[in-house]
Amino acid sequence: MNTNESIEQMKQLNLHGMVAYYQSQLSLPVHQQLQGNDLIAQLLQAEHTERVNHRTGRYLKTARLRQPAIPELVECSAARNLTKQQFALLLEGDYIEKGQHVLITGATGCGKSYVACALAHQACAMGYRTLYFNMNRFAEDVHMSKIENNYRQLLDKYQRFPVIVIDDLGLKNMDEVTRVAFYQIIEDRYGKGVLIITSQLPVQNWYDMIGEPTLADAICDRLTSKAHRIELKGESRRRDLKQ
Image (cartoon, rainbow, N blue to C red; front, side):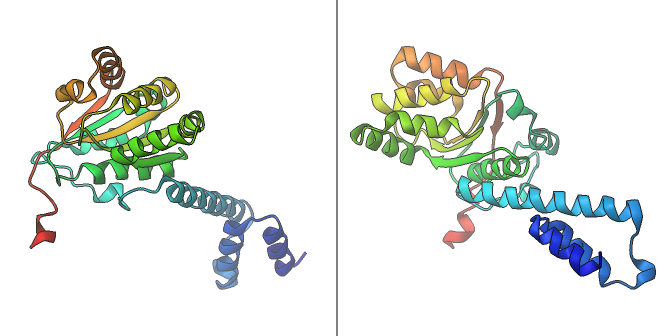
């Protein structure tokens, strides 16, 4: 079998990573081309990388993150109250497997959403289906699902994502319908997934924002138990955009 036939078979098997790498090898002088086990190992690695990148791109498209945040661009410093060690630990993804939520609080504009989206980007790269939504949009979707009689389908949809980012929790107090749906999402995710939540409100103020004491107790207990907390500091990062 000649090289052209090998490439055609790779294409038929959708081994696009292998095709690209093999073609790059063939473009080299013969004495520089890999042979035998070394070539096979690199072909397999190229295919694996291609498939991971394709999956990551697909998951990022589905996630619809607010920002195209890259973990490497997150600023970690004492001034921000976010250490490199703390962020690196989260990037390892163990919190997802252990069902430990991430709660990110801080003043408006300090970069909460960017950190949350960076963690979501990493989750997609690690093979976890991820979904992002703003809390106000969530409330609208829940109310609309009640009107259109597809509330159960909406909750089932959320349950299919191991990682969900809920941005801007607490911009307004929860009404009864939103509160019950929020509790149900948390309950459905027990041992199956995590929430990454951002809020301008300190965690200790969430109880009053949620409202009804019984559900507020249940929600806060489930969210904060063994959760990773990031309390971002610093001035607004939007200031330069306003000048």
